[in-house]
Image: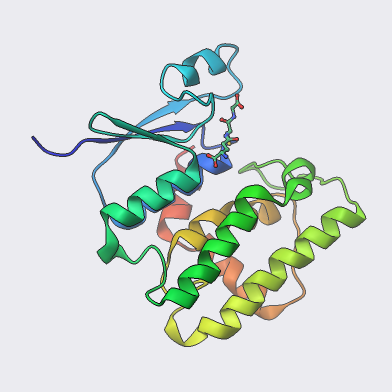
Length: 206
Ligand SMILES: N[C@@H](CCC(=O)N[C@@H](CS)C(=O)NCC(=O)O)C(=O)O
């Protein structure tokens, strides 16, 4: 029997964590089904809980196995498809990639709350010192990695990987809220993400 993968996702318009898992699956190139749940529907929570015990999306079903949380899905994909280089090839770079994705996964609360994920544009964000600090930190990560890995390709560690999937929603937030970096390298990386074929597909199919 062929392997069956299903991603349970929130709607494209509002679910940034779902986008991350979906980007990873698209990048790997597996055949997978999707179950989208409209997160603003009155019974959304009940619907999510039919699939995901945490009450959150994304969740991945691989045959009879259920994996929930974007980070666990990322690590599972990496173990199943090592040849797709979802993490960079050398141990030091992998450790940095894991630091970056963990920082994203557990931090940047003010970016999340002041710039809620949306595919619309022309939105207004709630400005604050903390928001500026977090934006500065994201830009510092992008700049540092692009400077280090520029020779390997145009993504954070050269080739597209989990770190790019985890940070792509921040690029879309900046676009939605009209935040434009003054740094050329940061802007170039943001354009790379905005021009990624799968990011475009997520944004146009909503
Ligand atoms: N740590 C989780 C966060 C997942 C998360 O917060 N998902 C949101 C959608 S982006 C969700 O399920 N919200 C619905 C709810 O909380 O009822 C992950 O990385 O997957």
